Each structure stands twice: as C-alpha cells, then as structure tokens.
Image (cartoon, rainbow, N blue to C red; front, side):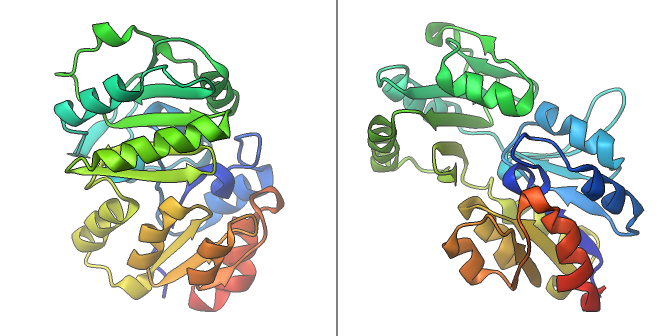
Length: 268
C-alpha cells in the first residue's frame, strides 16, 4: 500500500519546456495521497508547481538542503542545511568565470545570484522563467547561507575540466553531482534527496515499502534507494533505469500518470 509519493521536477514531473502537462496536473490533483516535490531547484523555482498541484505538505528543495512548508505569507523552514561558508567561498573563488562556456551561479534561500548573464544563466531562465540577481564575486556576503552552487556548461570540454577541479578539491561536507549532463550542482553533503524523504518517513512512521518515487537523473538514485518502489522516466539514462523498480513513459508523454495507472496500480 503506497502512502506517500515523491517526485523529481525537471525532466520528470515537468516536460521539456519546464511545464507540467495538463493531463498530469489533472491526475495529480485528484489522487488522494500526499505528494512531495524533491528537487535541486530553489523554493521560488518550485512555487508554480506547488500552486498548480495545490500542494500543502512539506516540499524538498536543493536536493534536501531545505525542507519547507509552503505558506501564503512566506515558506516555513522545517530543516536547513546550507553549504559551509568556507567551502562555498573556496569553490566560487576557484572557478568564477575563468572558463569560457562555463556558467557559475549560487543560491540563497530566497535568491539566485550570478555575476553576469551568460549562456548558462539564460538557459536556466528559459526553463524556470526566473532571472538571476547580478552580484560581483567580491560583493558576496558569505555569512548569508548559500544552499547551492550551480555550474552549467555550454563548452563541454571546459565544463568537464571544471567538474574535475571541483571533485579534486575534496572538500569535506560537500556533495557534488550531475543533475543533467551539462549541470553540476554543489550542496551540503547532507543535502541529498534521501535526507528529506527520510525526514517525512520517520515523522509519519512510514515503512520503506509505503513510499513511491519518480525520477530521471543520477541525483535521483539516493531517492530510489530510500523508497520501496522507484519509477524511472522513459527519458532517464540507462543507469537510472537499471536500478529502478519500473520504467514508465517519458516526461513528454505524461510518464507519471502512466506509471501510476499502469505500472504500480496494483500497489495503491
């Protein structure tokens, strides 16, 4: 018996234009089960989906770095695990805009910052409809918690070089993972998708077998390990599909609806 559903957003819940297909919206509004978004996105980038699906319970941002309850007068923070200030400073100062075709930006709880608009930030804006607030690197206040540093590559040779530089820094307390082939995101080591799911699981005294998750990327693997039933989207890579309980249709084809109706219907 499934009692709680968790889903990634980009390329899973959302289509390739960064929207929820109307059929998926209608279906998820009608199911009588709590639904939690588990995403690398910031809360402000999640808000349209929370509104569209009329979600009331806890939501998980920054891959688990922030758990919050959506409120009309401002989100209520349930759990907060930003990057250590020194780690954030070292990463940003190491990379900055030194590599052509590599975009560096960072997130606090309420804002997305970048030193300049570039191909990477413009691509992210095309997905989220949010523009970064511009701030020079030497103006960063590292006493304000940074939850995520995002690296986006349009020059893949330089992007791979930057990814290796960050990995070779071997910073303690840091989690660094691909969320897409040209996205590399750095968060607190605690901020993995399993963290938020475990919080809800323990609070509601749920069993692993009562949890269901949908995902498409490698940063969803920890989420898949934490639930009893995992469903990979049809557009997921082979590694994700190989560990999932089931594979459904793609995000463009209302894969969540298909998965709920035809793949795991016998578990509901």
